[in-house]
Length: 144
Image 1 (cartoon, rainbow, N blue to C red):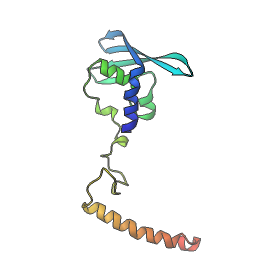
Image 2 (tube, helix red, strand yellow):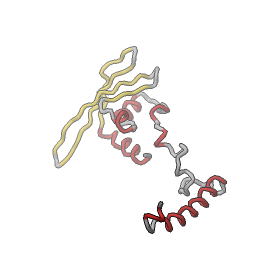
Image 3 (cartoon, rainbow, N blue to C red):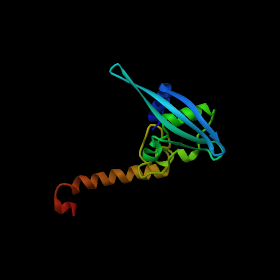
Image 4 (cartoon, rainbow, N blue to C red):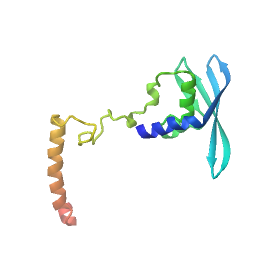
């Protein structure tokens, strides 16, 4: 996810922002993205609404609603508004490496808790279960 967000931030360079209006409920922006391919160009427009009071941002592309990722257009508006942080409601727990998942006991490059008793038990159980599955997968009867 980190690399995907980096791509979104780099793609901000192709976006031009314009404030349409400011209301008591926030600011409305139009973000223009210039698309280039095969020597041709086209412009796409996205409507973004930002409310600093409630710290909410919505975009007409609805990438966050569909994939749980904040889009480049929202990042563009947040940059314009000089927002230094993003609300935690836009950081979906499934993208965080801190969430407890079934496989968090597996060894990983960012996980340095190899002395953790839970991880040690997990590795020992996996070793035993791998041996059981090697025997059990030989036939339907042994699997049963």
